[in-house]
Length: 406
Image (cartoon, rainbow, N blue to C red):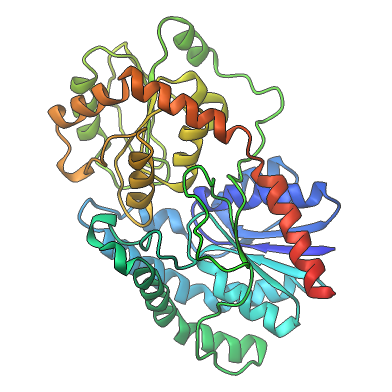
């Protein structure tokens, strides 16, 4: 079959969908991928045909501040609305003659509309649970805010808020590009597949049959990956270090944060990846090594613990590596994943980046060094090692498409 996979987001949003695209290609399907232009490096490496979409999400996150999570959400809506017509035009062009569209992220409503126009099946895919349930609250609201009896309502509400924020621009593009009438309500009947581990989030009993957890969609490790000599030497020179990195969270005052981290580490070994943030010319002590981007599935098993922002992908990768986490969530669904890791007993309660101090971080470091926590994290990693999210995802897509054609 000819399949189109559509998403728009950061590398953390894009990479799992590229990995799923490759799994579909290896199953014999012709796959075209559409995503944010700066996030297509993995598609090139895996030889997945890719089409860049306009919009600069890195510039958006570079304006992030510890008090600006709400502003970031508004900016994501504005970016989506500004590019909806262009995304729809490019998706319609790419999807001609396709058998189905797999869609995710900010471009999800665009993909659903194009599938409607072409009269082909649409399958939702994502790393954040969007299907309402009584068993967990909306991932876009701090878990402590929501009483358990309002879990299902909270996610239905945030889904509706997003729909209302995007539908005007969407309906304008539907008319101009697709010749379709306005959409008056949110789509809910299409299948939803999640690259989420059932170990981190067990499948809710009240989910419909068209929603499924596959396990993490993690890209394969680059064949013959060899770490830079400086990193290999550092790892060989002492005990396993602690990793610190915040991925696509730009706009962080990383030098200020690192001053706190250096004091809290109190001589412990660590590696730091600046990601999209700028640490300038800051000099690090000898017990801390600055590294470039390194595959998590290679690096994390060699760490003692992982300090991160709580993105779905990084949270999964730390857990599957069998390592405890210290999570500093910044925005979006990150507090949700911080809470899931905490509930599993493999992370302390989330730390606030805005209120971080040496004593708070030192306490968190003591937590992840407890033998009981280390053992619990290793046990979680062994369970997740038995999951095969990519194979499950590809198989379920084929199953859904077979059912729709039958």
